Image (cartoon, rainbow, N blue to C red; front, side):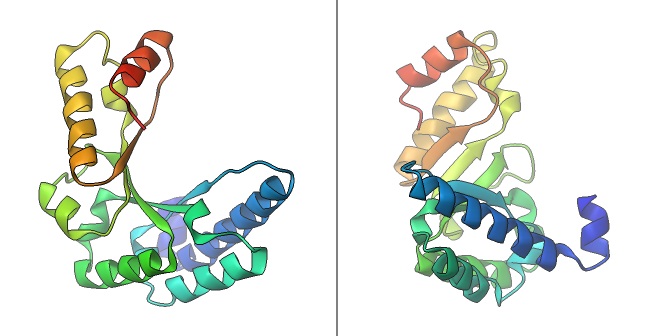
Length: 177
């Protein structure tokens, strides 16, 4: 349904609704003593919306959630649109203290240039690399080298799709975030 929402011009309302619900739930969880953060995916059109940082700040203030408890996930195709505007919006979000993550890293238009240019805090490695890291030496090498790259760039790395003990053990040995 996301392409339809995008086409109909509903992504702004949808993203704000998801952000509001997520922060409201996070406020309740934190109030119950759970020191958690929450991650919310944004579309390319959300990152073109120069009003987004102000709206995020209003929601953070409304629910009394610290900015660093919110992670906004973006996909690599963000640079396929208006890169300058996206970078402006992302920089404003970072100034608020919100963390930014590149979701599904390694599956799209991966470019090391944008890792240097974008103000991101986290890489979220796609599950396709993790699912075979114990049986495929090349997949393991990609995971290890991406982990090292994220460290060297001052980012954390999260992996998707850890579904067995052997993979979890390997990721622990490699000190994956």
